[in-house]
Image (cartoon, rainbow, N blue to C red; front, side, top):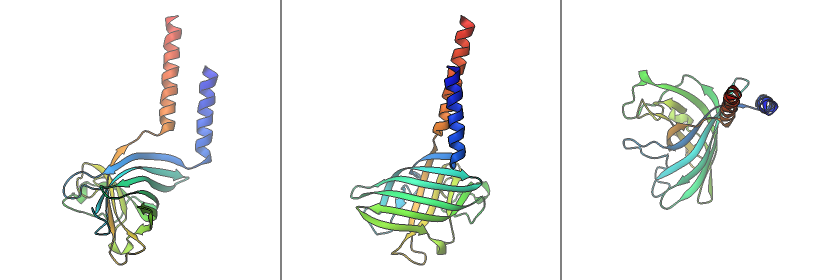
Length: 203
């Protein structure tokens, strides 16, 4: 049994060094407070304009290069689709977007300036980028949904190819932390080792 545990640990760390390391993972849903209880707001492009998001936001560290992905589904009573976005150019300090009273001094947020990817709604594919002329980036962390400084979330103004200037769609997200599977495996192995130790002590 001890050899199995050691082999599993070796395999885990060898795999981890061969690719970007997952340093955070969040289950993503709608931000649910105030007048912006939605995941995606499409500003008149669809009716209803708001979509519920069910997705995962995963943050990677590749030798100090921080990136992230957002992958999941979009739904409202009349439409459905998928969201697949990539994030790059990580910053720990950027222009924070305040909406509706979040105290900028109490915010613990990080930022991705570059956003790219696809939002597909009813088989119509939209190429997505950050709304650069809006002056903000994708912000995530405590208070980063720009409404409640005590909630873990994220927000961004993004554009599709049919928009220009400051025209945009609005991402407004709530986050729930998800334990990384590798960490869960290590925890499980630790529990196995603890159980084996207790069993030997009882014999």
